[in-house]
Image (tube, rainbow, N blue to C red; front, side):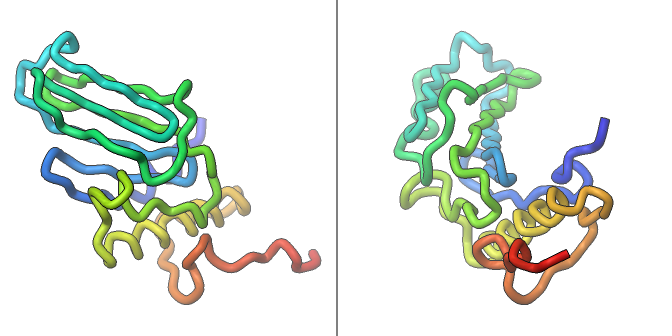
Length: 157
């Protein structure tokens, strides 16, 4: 079984007051730190295709409209070690150019440096998928990587 690209190359997290979020071409990962000893019964989570709502012990942690659409049937959340909630959202648009600039519309925005690093990572992930015989996990990229990087599909082989 091959190791996932993000496991080899690391992730670019966007820090938030409650934890962090990061993304791949296909998914958005949300990690929420909760008080140690939290039980699943104390977590109320709604994951819609365009919205999210998370309450822990009656306190609202996240609520709002997602930056882009997701596949709600494939969204999951888990409580790990009674202190971390991990939410996984499957993006509807799974192209390298679909780099979310924020988790919610207008909230939990990535700063310019983090956004740049996220876009670079998604572009390298795209290159990895297009060229499975190569390892791009430690590569650096410069130049035209915005919007998923250059399009080489029209080049003849």
